[in-house]
Image 1 (cartoon, rainbow, N blue to C red):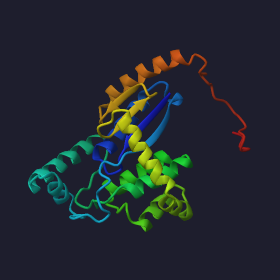
Image 2: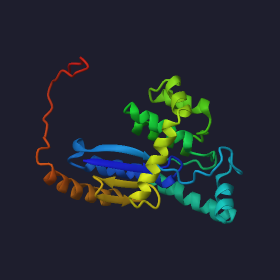
Image 3: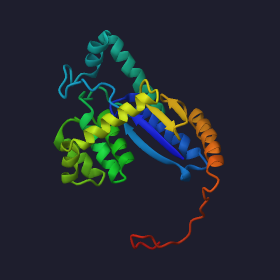
Image 4: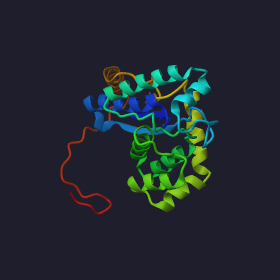
Amino acid sequence: MKIEIWSDIMCPFCYIGKRNFEAALSQFANKEQVDVEWKSFQLDPTIPEVPKYQDNMYMFVADRKGFSYEQSKKMHQDLIQYAKSVGLEYNFDKALVTNSLKGHRLIQFAKTKGLGEKAEERLFYAYFTQGKNLSDVATLIKLGKEISLTETEVNEALTNSLYVQKVESDSKDAQTLGARGVPFFVINRKYAIAGAQQPNEILKTLEKAFSEWQKENPNALEIQDGQVCEPNGNCK
């Protein structure tokens, strides 16, 4: 069963949504038959790499949304508490606002190596918890190495226009499917979950979708694992 997840690595509800999805998947009896693919969605491609109030998230949001500083800070404090409820630590006091394109390019390349989820998780943590600048090439090289990419591979992600095209293609695909924002979860191109919904609600949709998918794919095998030799020569 295929699950596609659109998100922006600078979207606070996307990181929370990832945790809620993981909690639901951990309770899903057929999780071994689920294929998850992370997709790119830039909420605001117009943000410059060094925007006004880059090192002041509260002022940045207040300025762009027409809020007061106090309203912005209260909104972010509420987000901090929401994040804590799912085991995440948001440090908006040191967050550095920037354009998310370079981060998405890195994720797109990581997907070609089977490292899409690892890249997504590492960049979320770097932005929301550590206050890393996700437009800084040296920072992205360091983060890439932490998920087993080489410096050459990170540079390839950041210079080859193919990965910009993949980011743009993902965003257009989401809009075609009816996404008005992120996170946006699509199951078998038949069911969609919009927003960071609670794990129990996600689980209900997973179970419903899987039941239908299983009926449509009667030849899907239930595999009991044992010791095997794999094509790469590993025997375990």
